[in-house]
Image (cartoon, rainbow, N blue to C red; front, side):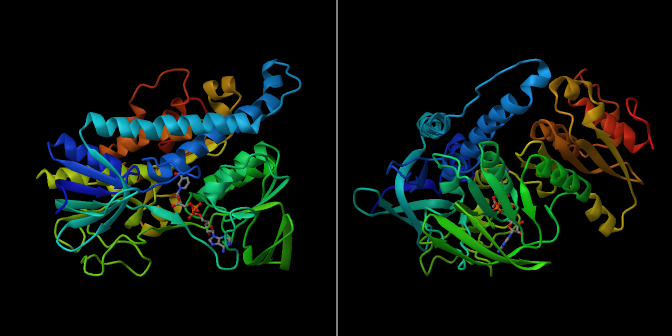
Length: 475
Ligand code: NAD
């Protein structure tokens, strides 16, 4: 018989490692299993987010944005620079250092919280037992009072454009390029496609994004999506909408992509092709036949609102269950699962989960888009404020974009807040808090915002909802 725990968590991404820490804070004896292996063979906690997603992409987005600004913006500030050059190896090294620090930080947090971090594969057996296959060593069957499955997600592969790790690649490989490909194709104009497309475009690639849908950024408020499309075009990204990829073939050091759009059959030849058409829940090798866990038709582990699976005492959280595939959503589900196990009352408010796309300008939103509110039939009012009228944005030379607020006409409830512009990902936090507290537009109107600050744009947008904007004409 192997070791015995109160809670065994399978997966140490932002859902799993947070669940493990929270459970140990409740005084439970916790193990967290993870098998993540880096390309150099080393193991690391942190899952996709820290090792191959959110964190490395943000490091490269920041570096490439600085390079872009040095070339195109510094002169507007009266700073004349010449010979600005990029050293992608160094950029990659900085990124790897950040990832190493943060993943090492999780190992440190496990130690501090007395969580047993187990490196290897975990498989759920019947009766809340977990088979642990260490990277080196013998298989052990762990006994646990509760199990939390947090196995994450993995890129969807297109059979017509299979990954070869060299020319047709997923987002992980596309974060590791050692030089900017002269031409880069991206299949999928979603979050990953736009973030990665932005990075390599700023570093010198000619980027073409092929998006199957006719609508650009279909999940984003239409007004913002339109503005985003305009900005990305200005930055030199080519985005082809309604482009259905039919085949991708590698020949020599090029990839030829065949696709169909409104004008008929087309083809595009590029040096590298990134396929970013979404991610699927990752449950390979996770569940024994008699584990009692149900998967839905798309492969997600079925859970209720409290993340309980069909197997008693087994929870599932994060990307492997329904809901948006976002690190912060997974972390909150981890906290909820641990709190419920500890006998506390806990819930996740799925209505106020912020989304952020880290392009420049950033796009961030929470709640319903104007189109969704309209479709719901509820009477509403809208206010917006452009960053072009924000003193702070002007001083920053970052005037593209706006804040838009959609509120209920009857009781003034904030229904959705949509921001495209500088630091949108930070600004959205105020809106999330207001909505979490069931705030009204008037609450934001009556809240004092520092001047000059970008946050004033949210304040003014709230005022504009009632045609009371002070620094922009009300229409
Ligand atoms: P996504 O769902 O955001 O976008 C995929 C896009 O690919 C969609 O627009 C879809 O219409 C398009 N598509 C699908 N099949 C296609 C085809 N055959 N040809 C052309 N286009 C096609 O998925 P993603 O960008 O791969 O991201 C995966 C997940 O990771 C998402 O859930 C996302 O929320 C998450 N993520 C979040 C962040 C962030 O929060 N900033 C960053 C990266 C990833």
